[in-house]
View 1: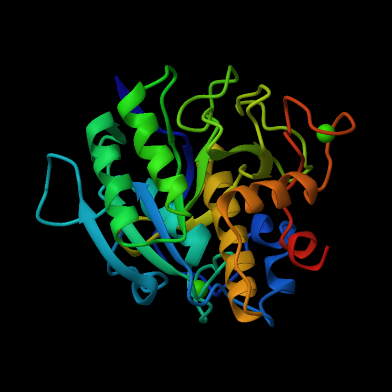
View 2 (view 1 turned 180 degrees about the vertical axis):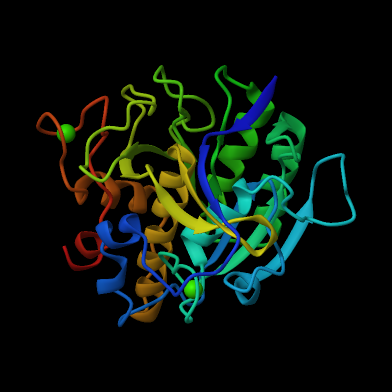
Length: 297
Ligand code: CA
Ligand code: CA
C-alpha cells in the first residue's frame, strides 16, 4: 500500500518576483491577523517530500528535518517540489521576495516521508508521526493520502499524536471520490479544496468525513531549487488550514490560553464560513476556514 501526494503542478518560475500575497492566504484573512500574531512559538511538522533547505523564502523558518525514506537518506532535501510548496503556504517569510505564508513566523519541522517520486510507505509515515510527537510539535500537516484504510498500526500512530495534543490536518484527496486516509480518520481535520470563486474544486474528494474547505486551486508558493510554482490540490488546502490553526494556537498562547485538538476541531466546525447547501455538507464540510472568525468570533 502506497501513499502519494495530492497535487498537480501548473506553472514553475525560476526567478523570485517581488513579494506577493497568494489569493488563498488573503481569502482565509491571514493578513488581517498578522498584527496580532504571525505564528510565533508554534511548531508544525510537515510530513511530505522534504523541503528546499536553502530556499531564501523558507530557510530561516526551518528548525529541523529528518529523512524517513530509503533514498538520499543523508538529507531531507525535496527533489520533487511538493514539500517545498506546502512549506511556503504555511511559513514563507515576510520579506521582499516571493510569497508570504499564512503563518510566516511559525517553526517548521520537516519529516521527509515521501520519496522523490512523491510516494511513500506506511512505515515511513508512522516513523515521521512518531518523530513529530517526540519533537513536541503543535500541528502535523499531511498533504498525502491513500485510497484504502492503511490499517491499525497506522491509525494507532495517528491516535497517539492526537492524544499527545497535536492537531493533525490531512488532505481529503484529489480523485473526485470518497475521502482518503489519514483524512478519513476522526482524529484528523480533513481538508477539501475550493477555487477562487469559492466553488468546490472538481477534483476534491467528498463525503461526511470532510471537515473544512480551504483554497487549493492555482496556489502560488515556494518550490524546489529556490524557485516558485503554482500548484492545485487538496495538498495546498491542507497547509493553508495548518497555517490558520498555527495563527490560532499562537494567538491563544499570547493571551495565556491553550486548546486541545478536539477544541480546535470544534472551533473549526462552528466558525467556518458556510458554503454550498446550508450547514455541514459532503462537498465543503463545515465551510471555508477563516482565521478572523476563529480568533474574533
Ligand atoms: Ca517572502
Ligand atoms: Ca454547507
